[in-house]
Amino acid sequence: MPETPSASAQPPHRRRSASSRRAILDASLDLCADQGYGPVTVEAIAARAGVSKKTIYRWWPSKGAVVLEALDDAANPAADFPDSGDLLEDLVVQMEGLVRGLFSDRRFGPALVGLIADTQHDPMLARGLVDDLFGPRVEDARRRLVKARDVGQISQDADPNLVIELLYAPLYYRLLLHQGDLHDTTELRVLIEHVMRAVAPKT
Image 1: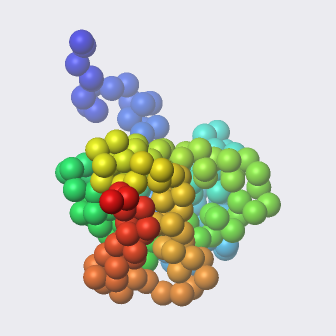
Image 2 (image 1 turned 180 degrees about the vertical axis):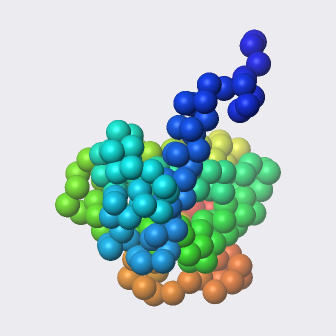
């Protein structure tokens, strides 16, 4: 297999494109942290990133699309689902990372809340949110839960999709309705244990 060219070996226009893209994504999240999602404009992102508005519209159709890609980029690999063989501990590790992103990261949480609000009147953005940001991560969780079911860690009649809703919905409820963070790992573990008891293997 041929080696991937180093950054210095790539054509100058590709290096410029990569650096411009990185600057645009960073600028969009920085502005969301500073101002909240609503006031941010494509013009402001372009100015912060040091690019033209035309450059942004060449790659993305809207502010929301820029922020969506920035969030997807920021979530990798922070939201990856571990597989140590211990489902409870894997859930704690994965969900702790999500909680930090949603409630402690000034760039991530506010941008996501604004983006979700924006999807209420933008069906294309809503589809992108599901397909690009949430979908792959939900599928990672589903695969982990199916594996746990196959080895008897949860009940054979447990629905992985419903288990995911039971686990993660409380986080988004707290985020979107301003109900506050899960205060510590103990509180998160209690949530996970409640759900796991509901789907424990039948004896």
